Image (cartoon, rainbow, N blue to C red; front, top):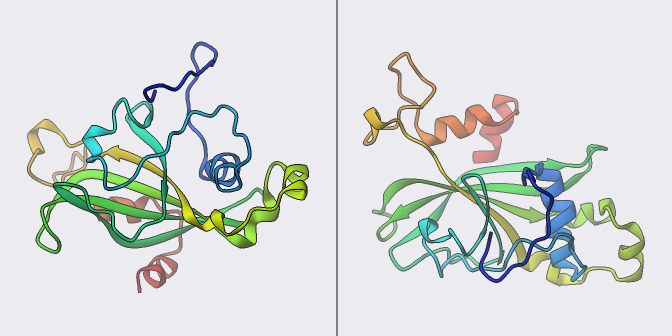
Amino acid sequence: MADGISINLPPGFLFSPTDEELVLHFLHCKASFLPCHPNIIPELHHSLLDPWELNGKAFSSGNQYYFFSKVNGNRSTEIGYWKEIGVTEPILSAVDEKVGIKKYLVFYIGEPPQGTETSWMMQEYHICSSGLDSSPYPSAWGRRKPDMNWSKWVLCRVYEKKRSKQCVNCSCSDDDDSGSELSWLDEVYLSLDEDPEEIISMTN
């Protein structure tokens, strides 16, 4: 829970939205200045906080942190920077309409390009203009269409990848008992439900 945010939610509430829900129910509302209920995700900036400083400032659910940020090419903090890994995943609605995209980033300590990779990951959600008609609030869109501000906001989900205690300084997967090693990038690729040729085309 972020500081200064009053949330009236039932006991046992777990914030676990799908990618589609994050885009349509939260990011669309933020970008178009529509009320969002519950209004639990705060505004932060990539450069103001290192990822381990998000606790108590971003909205947290389990080991994940959520916040809105203005689109900015500079994702540097005081001691490091967020770097895109070159994967852009489409976000589809229930009727297979593209409503957004999701970018993957990893946090590095130091100055680019010689920074040291950390286990902190970020998924950055962007709205697609073609998906504006897929809003869950059609009557609201009819009264107040979003202006170009929709393109100025992103929704960020930040989390730290867990490493086994025996493998703190390597890239072994927690669930891998075979002794083989997987980098965080390998695991991202394996987690995507995409055709291998499509994944390769996304990185080119």
